[in-house]
Image 1 (cartoon, rainbow, N blue to C red):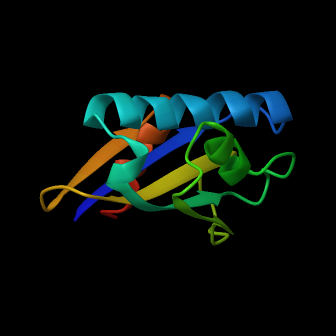
Image 2 (cartoon, rainbow, N blue to C red):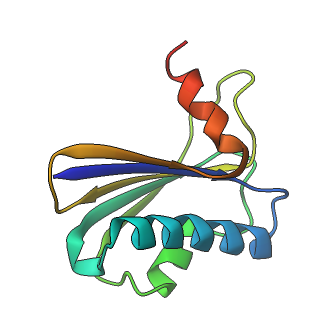
Length: 115
C-alpha cells in the first residue's frame, strides 16, 4: 500500500476558495502520482476549525471519486498551528512508500512534525 500526504492552505473561508484549493491539491496528487480512482482505497481529509463553508469531501466526490471511501474530520486544535488548512491522507494501491505534497505555505508543516 502506498500512503500519500498533502496539505494546502486557504486565503479565506469561502466556498469558492475551499473548492479551488481542494481541487488544486487533489489534481496535483492525481497528476504526479498517475492515480485513477480504482487505485485509491480511501482518503481522509482533515480541515482546521476555521474551515466551515464547504466540505472538501463533497468536492472530491464531485471530481469523480464516487467509489472511493472518503472521511472528513476536524484537525486537533493546537496552539500556533497553521490556520485555514486542508490536509489529505490517501491510501492507494502501489509500492510501500510515502509521498508528500505540501502546497502554498504548508511546506512549512514538514518541519513542524520533527519538533
